[in-house]
Image (cartoon, rainbow, N blue to C red; front, side, top):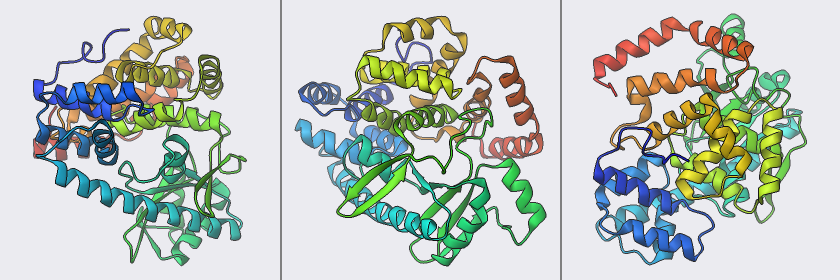
Length: 385
């Protein structure tokens, strides 16, 4: 396949070398070949640029572990990287314990939930917690139990911060439920953030039928702690759509997916892709697997190679992902006006059906005032690509 750099403007040399090492640090499993790749990528790297890169991609824990495993001395940034890795490990343990506690509380109130990504994915993919930065705890409930779940979270010390009006303002809350897929709460004492989801994705035609009522699978967090998350097939499909929805702008999302499927053989991988296709996420799955091949050197099954070459939508999504993933790390992707809008609009390419494309265009065009405000704000801040 076409190289991941060749479809976008080549980043500056220091930034490109830093990205290569960051990607090597995310390789899984951490076998001899992965360690050789880390040592080779570390030759001549600019360490301050690398530190900025891993912070932007939120993989400080992975970077610290991979460099130590490969015996690479990163003296100029070693103290900063180690301190951040320890902080992420503590935060991971705290979020894992809170995820299990909140899920038990929701179960007791008759609002069963699934934990999305976070601690559950860490254990399923990596077998340990706290390797990457996690901004929040994602909980999925059914649409019918949102208000019950919100009441439970409030009783557990969480306040609603987005939207500011909850069920006590029925008109505004009803519009939010219909338009959005989650609300955001923050714990008054610890500051922990919870995103309470009632839908998995923004596009209503993707991943139909998946929800908190699914049986899912159990992820054991250590000791007696465990949480429920999506079953393997739905989890794979969800991660592919989630990454595509953000333009795969952070390596941590692709690294999670790559580690999750590392033990999976070609036949099982094609089966996962077929299940994702039945959920409307086939194109997103093709893009995700093509990226794991390009970034981590994973073998892409020949049928998917042919699809990736032939499907224009896949090629466009890959080009966008390459641009977002390898962008200079000093600014976040959503601070780059053109790139941010391209990522937001890219959902029209997630499925080839004309009805899907039209539905997504209508959904995006329904929010022009918000787009105009964001555009004016970012122009004022000088945040052009």
